[in-house]
Image 1 (cartoon, helix red, strand yellow):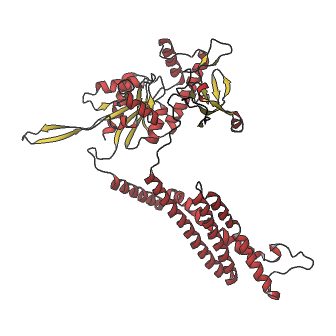
Image 2 (cartoon, helix red, strand yellow):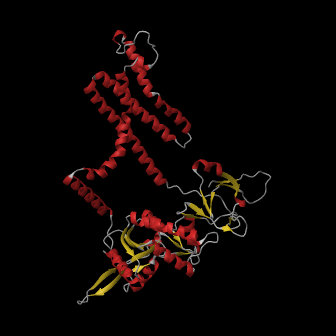
Image 3 (cartoon, rainbow, N blue to C red):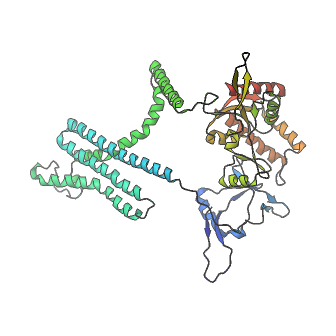
Length: 492
């Protein structure tokens, strides 16, 4: 939300700053769930409030309900949202922090933009020239000249449009916008020039005006053929734009479109090119590749994946599997606060004390080198490869797939073979106290929401394509054996 500082009068001697915050009202959909209003209503639900009179809510988004679950104070009737803290801490607050701008990235993007602009104008000019040649061969020199004038107007259109783009957000934005409006006049100027030339030809005027017809309008002074040639020339600038957007799609799908062995050969050539490029950019590592192996074990809650992971690590005598090194809020409060403020945590545990970061995963399993002595007493070194094991829910798995660069994910999905078994295990967790039904929900609504979340998790596990192995954890020892076999894939 927008946060802005309240400007004080000269007579105000208070030391504390005041802040206004923009908040948006949510719709109460029942059972402690609050959802966003439709986009047309949302704007009217926004208001400005003083930050010191606002309290934070510990809301969590529930995908199954498409709404936020907000704790409520059940001691009053009707129940009202219960703040997690009385108010925000605003003493010493200096306002929202702006992200630092990387000037190197800005300059690099500016150079790319300049190259793109020149490329677009150049391609439009080349397309116009080619169209002019084709028109001259097909329709004659006069139509070719008109087509070329229209194509020149199209190139001018792009040029003046670039002036507007160059000045967006700057001090000259208004002037740039005014100058760029010239582009709308260019095709009209071409038609005016054609009309004046036709009028100057006298009896040789190619446009025949019927008796009694009004002399007003371009179509009475410009023939349909001339108008078509001018407009086709003007719109030629769109052709290279369309082709530049279409070319990546054509390259990717060309192999599938070509029939028989030609299509197979093209696909093999593309894959070979990609592999050679990847090999050229990769640096050698002790593992033969520039990626950290990560065993990603994921599944809905209640499948027993955490117990399987614990047993996998315990029974591995070579200590090849390790867990990520989490950041502890108590042991390293400064680092924890810094990472939290930067939004670098992928996940926090249920207590909010331990946080998982990308570096915690990538740096958890360093290679250790040990010396071994051969029979001839010549010392040789061997490298022991360790793999970090991540116990992930679906949300964490999505984050790792989209943002964890530098890792080779080996996905293992842990599930059950029926929803009845999920429901049975949820009941066991409720009886043991591992799961607690919120005070403002019934057991039926709680179970219904949990089953919906499980179904959505299973859908992701099926369609995401990131899990090479699937284990249905009905029998623990058999599932553990399958997990060990899957984990060996990390070392291949």
